[in-house]
Structures are given as structure tokens and as C-alpha cells.
Image (tube, rainbow, N blue to C red; front, side):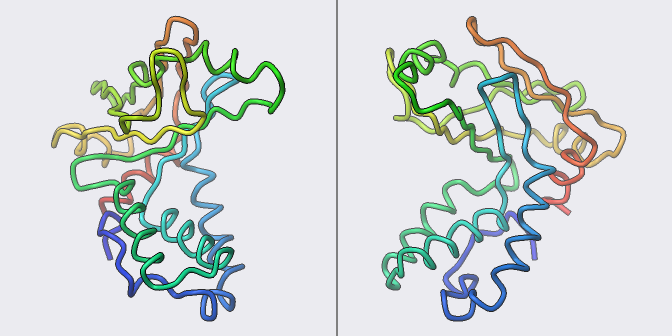
Amino acid sequence: MSPVRPITRQDIKGPAIYAHIRDDYRNRVIAMKKARRVIVGDKVEIVFDNRFTLTLQIEEICRLENLNDAQIEAEIAQANELMPTESSLAATLFIPLPQDEHIKDRLKELVGIDEHVVLHIGPHAIRAAFEPGRSTEDRISAVQYMRFPLSPEARTALMSPSTKVAIEIDHPNYRYRVEGSDELRASLANDYA
């Protein structure tokens, strides 16, 4: 089963069955997400999504909201929009700021971040393509969805254990570069194994 294969209705167990496997499944996905999470500076967290993380998200929504089949299909369609593809990685960027009176000012400082995130895979620098509509000239959402298009060469480099990966943010108000762990590279490569 390829992790980049779209999620279908048959993949979703639903609350009755999921309740019996929830703890084990959640623990496995949480362990997977640990390797796929990158903290970039003091205001940004990036989590690389895949079929397993997105399936867990749907199962949890179904459990909490008791969705009907049409609503489950809608959640599946939305999750598949966030799915990595054979030619791209997908990630969610979070800006986990404290919920206080200064949050709007702190977010405003990061307006335009959607043009300043780069994934480095060996010699390949891949600028993120963000989901449109989550920012304007004067405001930005604290949750952003992005995609990193992979050339065949970048994908080949990702598969090599000796390749280094890094995340860089080159925003005028927020400049950081974080080297990714070997576990991150291996987990992203595993999506294509």
C-alpha cells in the first residue's frame, strides 16, 4: 500500500471499529509524526503529512462529530487535497502563538511567510507552494497548508540515506534554517517506498 495513494471510504473504519484500535493506531501515528515535525525558530512548526496522519485525522473527526457518510466523504475529499503525491510532499505549517491580546500583531509580523519557506533536499532548494486564500496583505492564518513540488532528481536524492534535508524560512522578519533529522528524511522517503 503506497502512502501517497488517496484515501477512500473503505480506508475509514468509523467510530464503532476505530474505538477498538484507536489507542494502538494513535500511538503509531504520533510516533511517526514525531519524526515528521520540524520546529523552525520560536514561532513556526511544520508537520509533513501523509496517508497515515491524514487517515487518523479523519477517524478522530468521525469519532468526535459522529459524521454521516456524506460528511465522511467530504472529510476524505478535503484530506486528499492535503495528501502528498508522487511528485510532491505536503505539510502543514502551524504558528502556535499564545492566545493573548498581542496575537494579531505577532501574526501580522509573519504576513508573507507563504512566499518564504524552502525545503532543501541535498542540493535541491524547493520553495513551498501554499494553499491560496489563507492570507492577505495584512493578515495570515495560524494554520497554513503547503506543498513542495519534487523533481525526479529531488525525489531520487530524498531516497538516499546520505542526503541531508533542511527547512529554511527566509522571511524578512523571521529567518531560520533547521537541519532535518535522519529520521525525517527516512520517513519522507518511506512515503515513496
